Image (cartoon, rainbow, N blue to C red; front, side, top):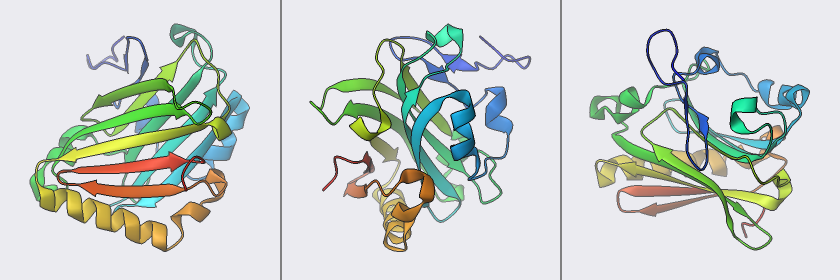
Length: 201
């Protein structure tokens, strides 16, 4: 499906999801949107981490009222990049070296912390990476996400990792709608891996 400008508003496949060109991606995101999602019967946890130019938001849980095109229910996860005004960054702007990011790709993998099986995954250069499993429902407490960010240069990755770790050290795990779930940052050359979920030590 495409919006009036011809952009794809969601991706299909084994684990469908919304794209950064979806209408709701144009809405400025506010913290109170996280608890308000309960009105849509979403049973999710969120994280909010300062990356030096805005906020990286992560979500995971059971999206019980997804549009019919996604099967109507199922577990899912999301990655979102936002500036300090709550506006979503487009993937193309995140990729620019002059912006200071040099992002190449973002991948969200969602796992069950009961047996570590993969529940959903998706990756692309985007300001909003989402994936949902329309055949499986898993409570948010039983899920964790492994979010991999790949950069053009080691220096880009290092700067991103340092900013995230600084935000975590200053209390990002205390974001009220994450309910204290752990965040871990791992720098591996040009990749930064951020784990969000209750399975973390």
